[in-house]
Every structure is written in structure tokens, then in C-alpha cells.
Image (tube, rainbow, N blue to C red; front, top):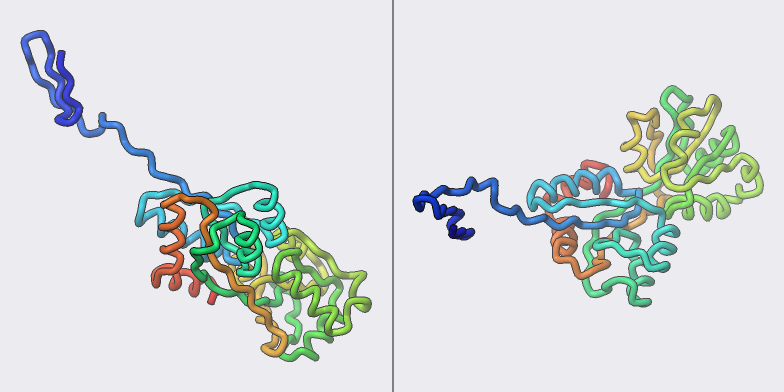
Length: 255
């Protein structure tokens, strides 16, 4: 018998009958999977952007979210990702040590810090820095994370002279693990998170009181850089810089 894969025909030695293979019988190419490690603050926008990229290209995107200290530790220990999305300072650090490619970078967006409470809890006044200080002193507990936003909040509390005054009621968690203790509280709990994350977890009982007052607000910028030579990874980085992706991030509270 003779098999012609290009024409998808099968010619039998029995009578020379010719049969055409169905198109589905052809081997389908496996689309590459883009491995991404990213800060959790942009999760609400990044997950939607990844779906849009998948729909446009057929390439799947697998995302692992981590805090900035965790990303530093994991990449430093030899873990790799096709795309790393992190604050520029961390990307600079990893590029200088040869862990990632420092020649390609796309800004994804920036996220400000917000104040969160559980749904139904009394809304504190945070309209000014002085008002925020009073709210923190009156709170039963103050909750924030160990990520970039939490590192800033820790420094802010120290700068406002509150470190010793509220230290006993301060609770720290890794990333979004702080959501459950915040929404399950029964008193006057106050939490600090990136605004985009607070909006993302509204369906779990979080309420955005508002962003920090302008004079003490802090924005964390996130940028994407390649962690491997994956062409699909580079394509995803380019997509993150597109107008379509920017629209997705803005809708998620990421400027």
C-alpha cells in the first residue's frame, strides 16, 4: 500500500481503491504554554488579559502569583518562568545577576494602596492623613500583607508614629491570605491592600473604603520581562503593552 500524508490519501494494494483521510486524523500541533510568575496585586487584570491572549493566539497561559520577596527568593533559587511581572526594582536586580533578560521590558500598570473593611462594617473616615491615624487608633485590628503594598504600609505606620501604639493589634499575612480574617472579623477591622485586589474580592465580602489620602499614597508599578527565550512569552509581553490589554487593566483598577 502507499500512504501520501501530504495529500492525506491511502491507496490500498487491494484493487487500488483510494480513500481520503479525514482532516481530523492529521496530527495537530501542540500550542506552547506561557509560564508566568507575577505579583498578586495585578491578578484581577492579568487573568482577564491572559484569557484574551489565549483567545487571540491559541497559546495557553499558566500564572503563578507571589509576593515580591517570594519572587526574589524563587527566581534566585533557580526557578524559571517565561515571563516575570514584578516591580522594576526587582527586575533590575534579577537582570543584573543574569537571572532574567534585562533588554526587554513592558510596563503593565501601577496599583495604589486602598483601605478595606468587611461588608456591613462601619466605614471609617480616611479622608485625610489625620483621619486615617484616628481610624487606626480606634480599630480593633489592622491587617495587611507581606507583599509590596504591605512593605509600604509597614513603613507608613512607622512614619506616622504608630508602630508601637498599634503594634499589638497588627496582623500580617502572605498575599491575599489576609482576605479571610478581614471579612470574618466581628469588630472594627481595617485592612490595607492594593485597590485592584479589594475590588477583585468584593464577592468575598470586602468593601473598598477608598484609596489612601493623596499625600501618603504609594503606587507600585509592575512591568513584564522575559525569563526565558520562549517566543510565545515574548508575544505575551508585547500583548501586555497593547491598547487592548491596557483597557482590560484599567477596568480592573490598574492604572
